[in-house]
Image 1 (tube, rainbow, N blue to C red):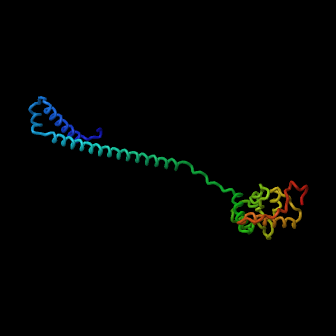
Image 2: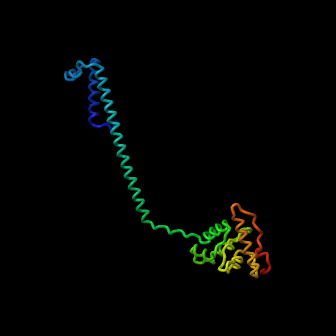
Image 3: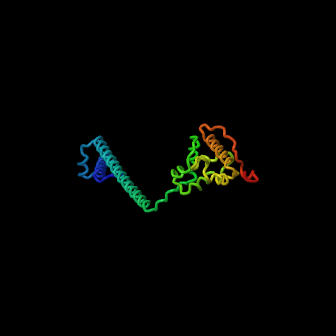
Length: 225
């Protein structure tokens, strides 16, 4: 019992020594007068009981000492963990903060126009520019449809100009999207309205049949319309 304290260890040794002396006398050994006086008149039951009590006390004392040691070790580990956590927080505070991520203006405007299409509406260029806080709303709007896939609605058609028709640079939108550019304003107006219908049908919930596109890809037209 390595955790046994001094007092119960002493009592356990005394009880075991007295029992050994009684056993030696019982087996016929010659004992000094002082030892014979200790064990005189004592019975086996007395030494069994005293030895059991001494060992019980020793086990309880050793268990309590072991628990106290474990508690002390746990406290030391907790203090070390708190110290490590404090050092980690201090080191983290010294590291330069990561710069805030800038939201992609093209992606943001695309999401806004998809919401407009889902509602079956349109939005003015001026209000869109103010709400989005864009530095160059024209360039961003052109970039929304720059990589237009076949059959995908032209979201820029949902944006109206100052007079209620297509934005003044709608021909640049078509050209950037790889579509043919019409020469007449009447053809441009028809294409713009059809692309609005296309967007409203495609993003409706549930989606509706999409009307055919009035403007072909530029690669299929030998000259401007």
